[in-house]
Image (tube, rainbow, N blue to C red; front, side, top):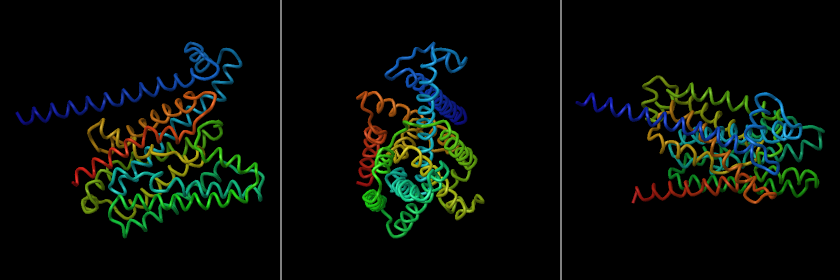
Length: 347
């Protein structure tokens, strides 16, 4: 009888996993078509299919789809998945679901170093490559993460660690504003537009760079599913399973910082995706198994950012909202709910 109950329980879990993945993929496809279809120029679904699969149709519509809307859609999906993955890794590292690249100041560190490159380096060189932006953002993310790690050694309460992360964010923002004071007007316009957070203006050359980085990280993290699962059970258990904990923790830091830095370099700082999405995915799946949660979190980030980007583009058209404004609108209540639930559980 117990074996039958266990078999039924596993069957129910597998059915739930399939339902969540099918739902996420269906939502991703629907939102992709929806985003291509929506805008100042309406393009029917049949025209979209002909333009994408047959490369046929009205030249104006083809330019809109291939040069404007598709690069932006790919950017929102891939970078949204990257942010969710970065948040999952940070939550694993700190053992807390409230950890995330934006809240802990990691994105602000990336923003500061990209600002330095955009303002200072442009006075020395005439062109800044995508790889230079990624390297700068990665360096900023690592330094900000270093300060968070130093704070975490003496601060045991996650709520106080969040305060430390916010302070790091304010310091980075203050230094960025100081740099802007002495920047050229053209640099200020570019930096302000980027710092608000947006997927607009994405080019296919940029898509190739961040897609390679994020997908390589996704594959790497997925291959780490087993040690991540062991680490979630505690460092002692992970060591007993043959995991080199020190090397593993460094790898988690590097992966999460690279993902957060890459997204910040191309789209600016985007809030709450890294916290809200992994939490919601775990709630839907009712499991924390990395081999299931990792791909589901990536898909969830794709769907979440595609939806938020649609709202940012169309809610007050022709005026466009920053993507971070919309992600905060939907993501912040999730974080507040987690904080209340954790506080209530302790009370």
